Image 1 (cartoon, helix red, strand yellow):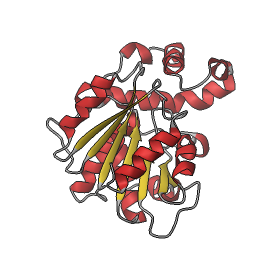
Image 2 (image 1 turned 135 degrees about the horizontal axis):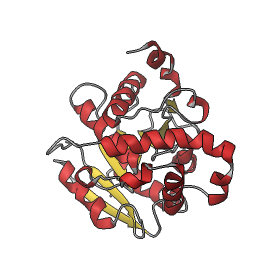
Image 3 (image 1 turned 60 degrees about the horizontal axis):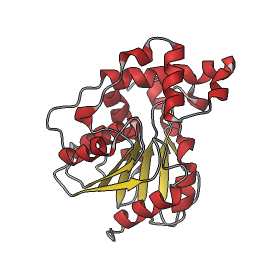
Length: 254
């Protein structure tokens, strides 16, 4: 563990809203280029019944002085260690969106191997199953290609990325995340023991419903698929529905 990693431990997890004592905990993992704040609305919908801890990856916002971690397993390891130190209450779930689904999956695998804390439930949202993960190399060709990909997915307004200063803030972390995605190779046959709940937007241009459904191959436990109207970022307008799905699964009512 480097001095930089140790100093930054308190920056990894953010809690935006209060939770009741002893509430179940969900650790949420953002998409490529995303920050912890992406999950504020979901946290509000679940508060105070569920404690939501949002991961802040290095390289963005208040952590922009740190380099992005360009290895998904290394990123998962660091997060798994921090979550283990936090010792959240059971039941514990991981929820990852897009790239975050892969990071959450790898962190769950590490937890089950005793290198972190194992979740009781894994939510994977808007992401292809590990075996189907791929990144078109053209996306990383230059800044313009990367911006076009982000706009295509609806991650931000084209006007935002027209601003040179904003691009310089956003693109380094985004590029690092896409490099990590491109380099990611899942371990053959890797499966978590906990149940997986997969969530998908029915018009997602990045992860088709059938590709999200393939996550069933990555658990030896139960598997459920939930489909919502919308694109890659369906969970923004559907935060209440997503929160209900999370709550029902956490409490065993689904």
